[in-house]
Length: 83
Image (tube, rainbow, N blue to C red; front, top):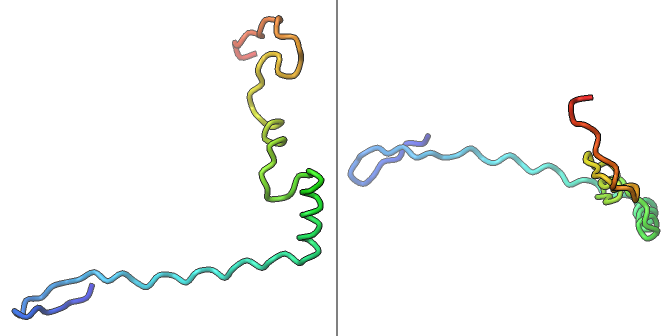
């Protein structure tokens, strides 16, 4: 807190925040050979590290509905009694 004085001589306390922390340095760019390789993989439809992969999300989804992976949805669902 910083103390200031008004024209009438009264004291006022003003909150002065500390200076902001410096920003971290920018991340280095990938070398051109890796950028070209990632562009080639992306053009061929391959999965890339650090990129959203909708196929993986679909395959790793926790819920499977009846008949999602087969054409048979007429079978009754298994009992949900913890077995």
